[in-house]
Length: 213
Image (cartoon, rainbow, N blue to C red; front, side, top):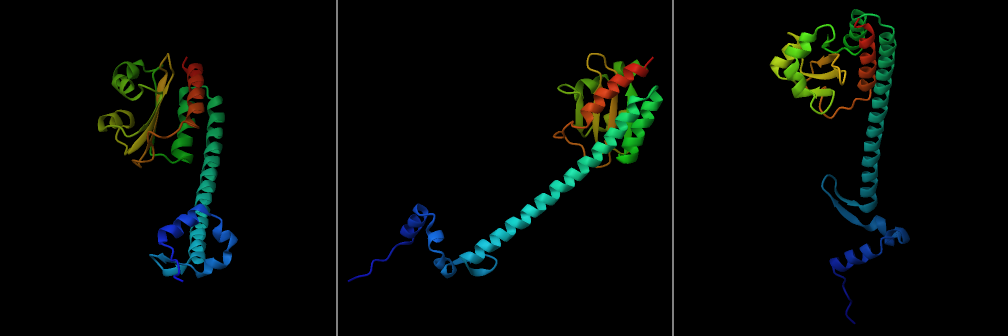
């Protein structure tokens, strides 16, 4: 009587149709040998253990990143909360500038900060910044990314700025422009959100309307 030999295709088809085969027959697992590019021939159990170990390592790294981001966001929240309190009691544009400088150039350590108020210098909005406003704020009151050399010099003078965040203050009535610069060309990028900057923009607009006279 000849012995029927299964083809690899038949074995593969059977295992696919019976995914619980190794669960129901665990004694088979240690006998299986699978190729591994890094460790030669290993058992299926060893390969699964190694894969689980790698997955666990990756999950730990992702958890560490999440914790790091959470700590960073908590620090940002505290800094912005303090800034908001300072701005709320400002009675002059100089006090507004001092409060912003203390937070962005101090606590957050950005390269440069510029607050240019159109309500006291209408020429900034009407002439010097007209093209910039038309170009950078077509769809939003926020711009994140890199500027051209002329635009960078126009806003930050001679300071080294690789990327920046620009916030147009005022919607119907243009009140001013807040610019935050970083030496890092990749720090500010178009995909950034406005989680902390939107409340700052809204409060600054209220404060500028209050202190402009």
